[in-house]
Length: 130
Ligand SMILES: [Zn+2]
Image 1 (cartoon, rainbow, N blue to C red):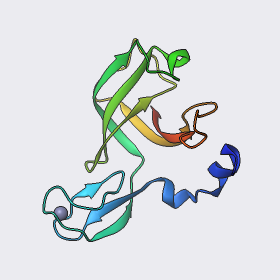
Image 2: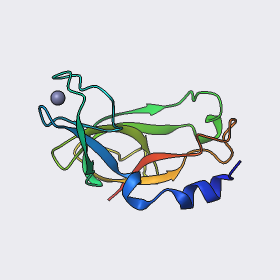
Image 3: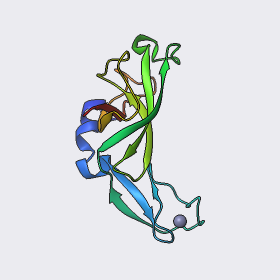
Protein backbone atom coordinates (compact mmCIF):
# COMPACT_ATOMS: atom_id res chain seq x y z
CA UNK A 1 0.00 0.00 0.00
CA UNK A 2 1.50 3.30 -1.02
CA UNK A 3 0.38 6.48 0.66
CA UNK A 4 -1.24 9.33 -1.23
CA UNK A 5 1.81 11.57 -1.07
CA UNK A 6 4.08 8.94 -2.53
CA UNK A 7 1.43 8.08 -5.11
CA UNK A 8 1.33 11.71 -6.19
CA UNK A 9 5.09 11.92 -6.56
CA UNK A 10 5.30 8.71 -8.52
CA UNK A 11 3.01 9.86 -11.30
CA UNK A 12 5.34 11.36 -13.92
CA UNK A 13 4.34 14.85 -15.04
CA UNK A 14 3.80 13.74 -18.61
CA UNK A 15 1.23 11.14 -17.63
CA UNK A 16 -0.82 13.61 -15.64
CA UNK A 17 -1.95 15.45 -18.75
CA UNK A 18 -1.81 12.61 -21.24
CA UNK A 19 -4.77 12.14 -23.55
CA UNK A 20 -5.29 9.75 -26.48
CA UNK A 21 -5.70 10.72 -30.12
CA UNK A 22 -7.57 8.25 -32.33
CA UNK A 23 -5.35 7.06 -35.17
CA UNK A 24 -8.44 6.60 -37.34
CA UNK A 25 -10.18 9.97 -37.14
CA UNK A 26 -7.97 12.16 -34.98
CA UNK A 27 -10.49 12.72 -32.17
CA UNK A 28 -8.82 13.38 -28.81
CA UNK A 29 -10.08 11.70 -25.65
CA UNK A 30 -9.39 12.72 -22.10
CA UNK A 31 -9.26 10.61 -20.11
CA UNK A 32 -8.04 8.11 -22.73
CA UNK A 33 -10.45 5.35 -23.76
CA UNK A 34 -10.20 1.98 -25.47
CA UNK A 35 -12.65 2.46 -28.34
CA UNK A 36 -13.24 5.68 -30.30
CA UNK A 37 -16.89 6.69 -30.09
CA UNK A 38 -16.67 8.45 -33.46
CA UNK A 39 -15.13 5.79 -35.73
CA UNK A 40 -14.97 2.73 -33.44
CA UNK A 41 -11.19 2.71 -33.89
CA UNK A 42 -9.07 1.01 -31.29
CA UNK A 43 -5.67 2.51 -32.07
CA UNK A 44 -4.59 5.60 -30.20
CA UNK A 45 -1.47 7.70 -29.88
CA UNK A 46 -0.71 9.56 -26.65
CA UNK A 47 -0.89 13.36 -26.80
CA UNK A 48 -0.11 15.83 -24.04
CA UNK A 49 -3.03 18.09 -23.29
CA UNK A 50 -2.61 21.83 -23.35
CA UNK A 51 -3.33 23.06 -19.82
CA UNK A 52 -4.81 26.40 -20.80
CA UNK A 53 -8.48 26.59 -21.65
CA UNK A 54 -11.65 28.64 -21.84
CA UNK A 55 -14.69 28.12 -19.63
CA UNK A 56 -17.66 27.21 -21.84
CA UNK A 57 -20.28 26.47 -19.19
CA UNK A 58 -20.43 25.84 -15.47
CA UNK A 59 -22.72 25.12 -12.57
CA UNK A 60 -22.46 25.80 -8.85
CA UNK A 61 -22.81 22.72 -6.67
CA UNK A 62 -24.52 23.68 -3.41
CA UNK A 63 -25.52 20.22 -2.23
CA UNK A 64 -22.33 18.18 -2.49
CA UNK A 65 -22.07 14.40 -2.70
CA UNK A 66 -20.81 12.39 0.25
CA UNK A 67 -17.20 13.18 1.02
CA UNK A 68 -17.30 16.64 -0.55
CA UNK A 69 -19.71 18.35 1.86
CA UNK A 70 -17.02 20.58 3.33
CA UNK A 71 -16.19 21.96 -0.13
CA UNK A 72 -19.69 23.18 -1.04
CA UNK A 73 -20.56 25.48 -2.60
CA UNK A 74 -18.14 24.87 -5.46
CA UNK A 75 -18.11 25.22 -9.23
CA UNK A 76 -17.92 22.48 -11.84
CA UNK A 77 -17.21 23.61 -15.37
CA UNK A 78 -16.77 22.42 -18.93
CA UNK A 79 -13.53 23.87 -20.28
CA UNK A 80 -12.30 23.74 -23.87
CA UNK A 81 -8.53 23.28 -23.86
CA UNK A 82 -6.81 25.30 -26.58
CA UNK A 83 -9.56 24.63 -29.14
CA UNK A 84 -9.25 20.88 -28.75
CA UNK A 85 -10.76 18.59 -26.16
CA UNK A 86 -13.42 19.53 -23.62
CA UNK A 87 -12.77 18.59 -20.00
CA UNK A 88 -15.27 18.67 -17.15
CA UNK A 89 -13.79 19.31 -13.72
CA UNK A 90 -14.13 21.25 -10.51
CA UNK A 91 -12.98 24.87 -10.58
CA UNK A 92 -11.07 25.92 -7.48
CA UNK A 93 -9.39 29.06 -6.12
CA UNK A 94 -12.02 31.14 -7.91
CA UNK A 95 -14.64 33.68 -6.88
CA UNK A 96 -18.02 32.03 -7.45
CA UNK A 97 -19.65 35.45 -7.72
CA UNK A 98 -17.54 36.58 -10.67
CA UNK A 99 -17.00 33.27 -12.47
CA UNK A 100 -18.10 33.68 -16.10
CA UNK A 101 -18.11 31.80 -19.38
CA UNK A 102 -15.18 32.80 -21.56
CA UNK A 103 -12.91 33.04 -18.53
CA UNK A 104 -9.39 31.66 -18.99
CA UNK A 105 -8.59 28.69 -16.78
CA UNK A 106 -5.71 26.30 -16.35
CA UNK A 107 -5.84 22.54 -15.80
CA UNK A 108 -3.94 21.31 -12.77
CA UNK A 109 -3.42 17.93 -11.19
CA UNK A 110 -4.51 18.37 -7.60
CA UNK A 111 -5.53 16.62 -4.48
CA UNK A 112 -9.27 15.90 -4.61
CA UNK A 113 -9.87 14.74 -1.05
CA UNK A 114 -7.83 14.91 2.10
CA UNK A 115 -8.19 11.18 2.61
CA UNK A 116 -10.07 9.18 0.04
CA UNK A 117 -12.37 6.61 1.64
CA UNK A 118 -10.75 3.91 -0.48
CA UNK A 119 -7.32 5.53 -0.42
CA UNK A 120 -7.31 5.49 -4.21
CA UNK A 121 -9.12 8.52 -5.59
CA UNK A 122 -7.12 11.13 -3.77
CA UNK A 123 -5.92 13.08 -6.80
CA UNK A 124 -7.53 14.37 -9.92
CA UNK A 125 -7.86 17.21 -12.35
CA UNK A 126 -9.09 20.64 -11.37
CA UNK A 127 -9.26 24.03 -13.00
CA UNK A 128 -7.83 27.21 -11.51
CA UNK A 129 -8.02 30.79 -12.85
CA UNK A 130 -5.22 31.38 -15.36
ZN1 LIG B 1 -11.79 7.66 -34.23
